[in-house]
Image 1: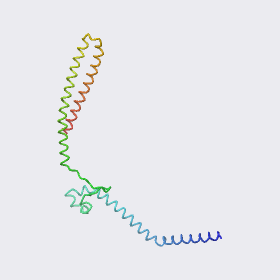
Image 2: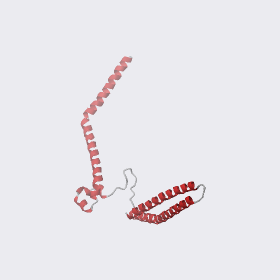
Image 3: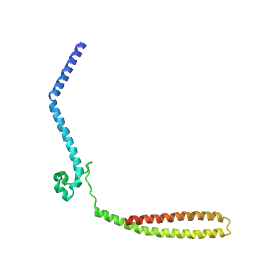
Image 4: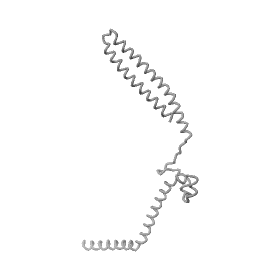
Length: 178
């Protein structure tokens, strides 16, 4: 009994597979045509999007755009209002950006004047500390060598700080000038 049920199930399954295979075989030209049209449509849409991407700068030129026929296509006339991710495009406000840059450079120049004064004050402190080192070494203090050594370290640090402040001022001036 089980053998008979297996035979019937196998023949029913074989018949169903044959019907589906014959349907696909009968409709293979239709399926091939639809698949071919789908592939051609996909390739053309990719080529068109690439053409739009590469030709939009050329089509934005006033003289050239009237000479090239595809620049009259709708895709070239208007710039996109949304990014590829679907977010709206936000355009830069150039006058505001220039104003912001001008204010930032003015503030930077105003503050760099203070840096020049600071560098001059550090240089004066360095020179005064050198004089103080000479006075300490000539004194009768018990720990004059240790004090002179610490003052010498302070002078070295002041010298490096002064050079760094001078370098910073030069870089700020170079950034503003260019």
